Image (cartoon, rainbow over all chains, first blue to last red):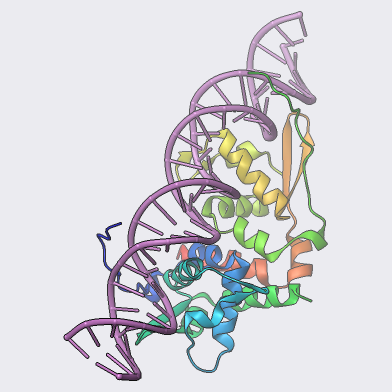
Length: 115
Length: 115
DNA sequence: TTCCTTTGTGCGGGAATATAGAACTATTGA
DNA sequence: TCAATAGTTCTATATTCCCGCACAAAGGAA
């Protein structure tokens, strides 16, 4: 197999380019919700690999990578390359400023659902 | 072509069976959001056909039927057969009682997005 | 430098989901 | 009985998602 394309730069939409549709689609998958909550709870940015265990099973790396891409391109997280890792942090504050109680309501509803 | 299956009964989940995941998935499609908003705004239950025009184009009937099915099975609307039509109404109150500000936050965010 | 290790990405095939045209069901009304 | 209307099911096609595998990119060791 011959690779034609090299690794693409990480895409982070500007706050204005973030859409409700994108947020809802990203958070309609419970795996991504768990990743986002984990990132939000960590006191310093963590690598993707830290979130490989979801509901007692190990996610394949390529799947994990796709989930991070969806969260990133929806504007929910920011990822910075630090050496060989990505350091991920939430864009919670920006989203709250632009979309009001939306994100909080979604995360609260998921949290309440797990009793 | 020979049809093996007859028309299935309409499925409405109980309030307890409604999930955040299902709600977010259903509302991650702007067409379904517009349908839901239309149903919520109408002062009496309307037929599906009333929502065939979306963003200046006419949706195929089969597509519209699928969108209504997704909304119904996510627990967002209730559909009752009245003769040859369905009469659709929202389950807004039930969802607010179970999920707090979730649905309001989503609909407000979409509304704010269209300036 | 060169090699090895680690973290994450690009590609491709199969599975699952979505779209829409056409045939069909089910009901009403003439 | 027939025609019209509203919505559903079937089917084919298109798109999206999942994941194994090969690879990229960076760091560390010798």
